[in-house]
Length: 283
Image 1 (tube, rainbow, N blue to C red):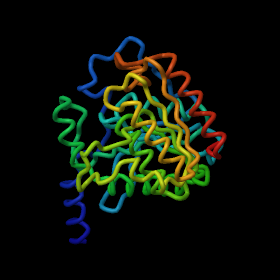
Image 2 (image 1 turned 60 degrees about the vertical axis):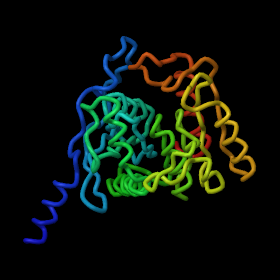
Image 3 (image 1 turned 180 degrees about the horizontal axis):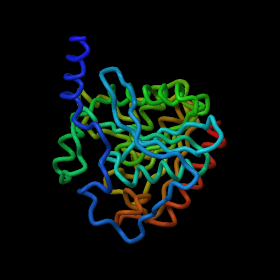
Image 4 (image 1 turned 30 degrees about the horizontal axis):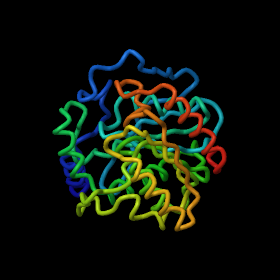
């Protein structure tokens, strides 16, 4: 009993985030007028707890409220954590017949929902890639154990920070069927660290599932030359991934709650995501 109490105390001390933030992250304010809001009618949606090696992490999950088991899509957050936009993406996927789950990837390092951008970056720099891969594996296991998720039909999608994670997870999990990476960084440009030692281009030969990369031509942080380099590396390794580069689209063109939103590119990318998942067994 004493050991269990001690373990619980350690878990509470080590996990900085024990419940998901409400609304939109502070550093993304003000919210744009075009913001899409997807209702939960016909869905089971809300916060759940995912058991991981050293405790639990909060996650948002959404799925149809009837039927199942459903194909599973992991949704990996932007740099701002699991805030309202990521929850809405889960509901959009659930409306398409998926069990969509977004675990909070910074649960141990800090709550970024109330931080300015400079402080968000400090928290994110402390998140190890190995931890992220392990927590995503735990999320898949959780989905399988619920009986509501068909993990034989497993996909992943992610945005910005999460777009890079999609590529890493495609190199990590042999059971993944497909991924869709929205403007995820491909090259570290000399910024690799002990916690984030490799970038997608370093792992091109290890990618185990086809990934659709959706990028913007006007993305100042991810130049088109990086996309071309990744494309060449994947082709050399005979990995069947694809890219779409949208003219005039900036970084975060899917983020309908931000000024960067580009409706045409976002809608086209969403259609391509659905087709990609169906083509590759996530349906």
